[in-house]
Image (cartoon, rainbow, N blue to C red):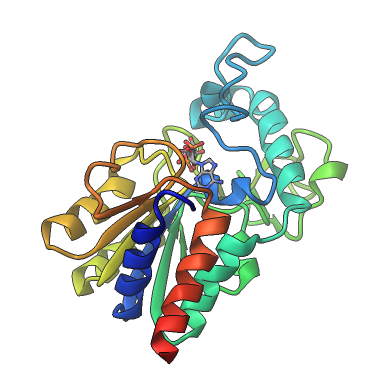
Length: 259
Ligand code: OAD
């Protein structure tokens, strides 16, 4: 954190006074748990095209899933296998600890790996769904837990034979109604600190809460080694890995509280 130590201090100070925190998270937070990000070096989309000659983003779309579920499933299974051995890192744990201190912490995550819940965060809006169950695309059959390494892809429903899928949001699909409604209600009440952590901030519903906070003079911060569309909006930009920054911010806020 050398070089931006004062910003870590400033963010710790903002956290100290905050009772309601919104933490917007993306794949970069789970990168420190060994999971691939979607974009950038080593990202899932970096390889370009699939064996079928289509971009990975297209393979992970609702349209391709409906036509060729075996193509989509190859990538879902890879994501599921990577996720099943991943554990929460110090960044996930710091967010849970910031909540355990007595604050309301809403985690708005695009991650489908369940690591926020595993770390102990209690208010998690999984806006892109989750991977820890399979649902039948035709009947009400549901199975959990899922062993992604043992799956025949595409997996089929034992009751009706239709294809199964996890309740994740594929490209071109709707966001889960419940999570969106909860986010709207939470934004109406408002937050007194908004953090953007490890996300390339490409989607409007990820950028808007931060833009709103900035316009209202609510303190905002970004923790991401790279620049993103929200980098110029935030009060504190800390270009270091989230698993280093978040525990340090929490530690300094805690220390200041005890002084
Ligand atoms: P991306 O892969 O687009 O972006 C990851 C971000 O994390 C980048 O801005 C990196 O600079 C940053 N990053 C990398 N390592 C980091 C670290 N150690 N600490 C902090 N930041 C780090 O991932 P998302 O923004 O989550 O959607 O992608 C959003 C959505 O795009 C995904 O949920 C997925 C994808 O398409 C769906 O599948 C619907």
